Picture 1 (cartoon, rainbow, N blue to C red):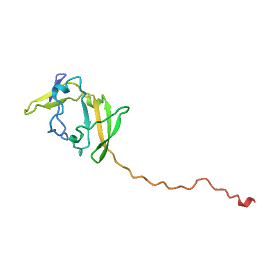
Picture 2 (picture 1 turned 90 degrees about the vertical axis):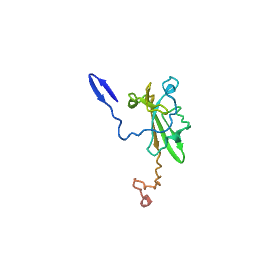
Picture 3 (picture 1 turned 45 degrees about the vertical axis):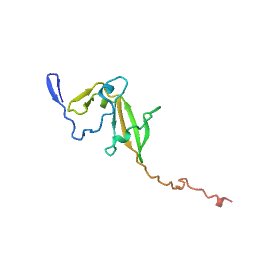
Picture 4 (picture 1 turned 180 degrees about the vertical axis):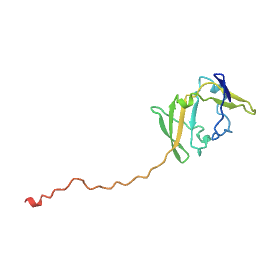
Length: 141
């Protein structure tokens, strides 16, 4: 993508670590561009199949994070509304059966991150001896 800024042409290249999605788009361009829907960027671990999130209801009432179960694995879902990293991102959608890309208008409402929960083993508590010296009163009889 090229952009002219201050008389200079700037070129943007997609980072090599990014990959194209090949599945169907959940919402048509018209719906993404409407005021009825809010667009979020969701970051997931690389081993998460995002189709497993289809139909998963995530309630964040009263907080910014919650726990989500996908199969046998537990995740923590954290959101940040109006995140600075998403304010300058746009979505390009490929038309069905075509090669043309369409720029969806509007900005991301925020970013959410799905993080795999790791269980830490509990360390058994050992009774520690008192640090106070014990007084022996037997000599005072």
